[in-house]
Length: 92
Image (cartoon, helix red, strand yellow):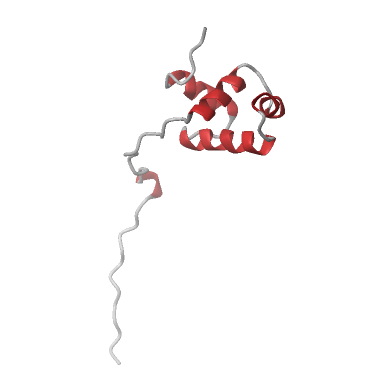
C-alpha cells in the first residue's frame, strides 16, 4: 500500500479571528419590562417590585433576565447604563 502524504494545513491564529458582525438590533422592551426597569432605576428590590405590581418575585426575575438578554448585558448596572444610553430610561 502506497504511503499517502498529507499536505500541512495552514494554522489559523485565534488572535486574528473576529466575532461575527451583529446584524440584529436588540429587541425593544415590552411595556411590563419598561415598568419593571423604571422600578429597578427607582431602587426597588425584586420582592418590592413584585408586591407593587402584584406579581411573583419569580416573574420579576424572569422579566429582568429577559431585559438583560435583549440588551446583551450581564448585570443590573450594565442594564441601567444601556437603558439610559438607548433612551429607554430618562434621567430627571
